[in-house]
Length: 272
Ligand code: 2HA
Ligand code: ZN
Image 1 (cartoon, rainbow, N blue to C red):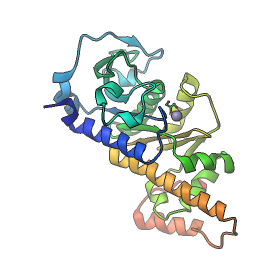
Image 2: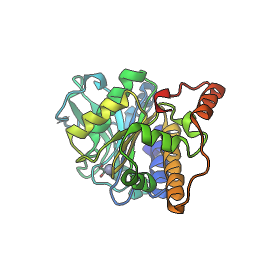
Image 3: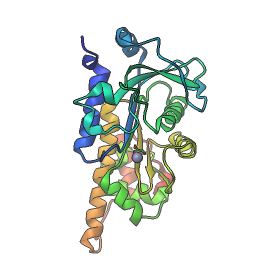
Image 4: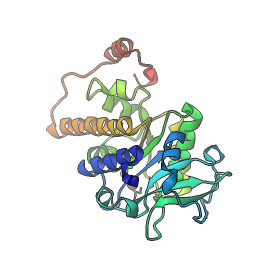
C-alpha cells in the first residue's frame, strides 16, 4: 500500500486540488489541516517515523494533546500537492502536553507545517470544545469574490451574513449560524489565531478582510462545500453590485423564517 492510498490522504489531496482549480490558492496562498480519527491513525501507523524530533509550538493547546493532523506545508503551493504530496503535506503529532509537535510522515526536505499552524490548531481546539469529535477539517483559502466584497461591505457580521444569505436560498441552510468577520490583520501570528479561535465557537466561517476565509467542517466534502457556497454567494452579490441597477426583490426575513421551519434549521435570528 502507498501512503497516498489512505482514504484521509486521498480526500485531503482531492480537496487541495479542487481549491487550486477554483483559483483560491495563488502561489503559496491558503492552508488546510485535518484532525485524524483514531481508526485513521491506526491504519496509517506503519508509515510513521516515531523517532522524529519534537518542535515547540510556542503555545500550549492541551485539548489537542496526542492528536494527529494532516497539514499543508509552510510556503508550499497548493498546485504542487497532488503531483508531489510528500514534499508539500505531512502528518504531525502533538505531544502529551499539546505544546510541541513532530513530523511523522511527509514534509520532506526539512519542510515545516503551514505558517498558520497555530491558528489551525486553536481553531480545531475551539471546535473540539464546542462540537466534540465531529469537526475534523480547518481550511483557509483566498476566494476572489469574497475578498472583493470585504472592500465593499461594512465589516460586520450582520451585514455579511444577510448579504450572503440573500444570494441563494440554500445559503441559510448551509450556514445557519451566519459568518464571523474580522478586520484586516497581520496573518501568521498568535493574535489572529486567538481572535479567529474565539469566533470559531459560534461560526463555521470567518471572513478575514482583504485576505480570505477560515472554514471549519466535519469532513472534506462539507468544508469544501461550505467555502464553495460562500464564494458563489459572494460572486452573485458582486455581479449584482456590478450591474449597478436597483435590486427589485430579495429573500426577506419572513422568507428566512419559513425556510428555517421547512428545513428544521436553527437560524441565527439576530441577523434577520
Ligand atoms: O501563505 O494564506 O495566510 C498561506 C496563507 C497565509
Ligand atoms: Zn492566507
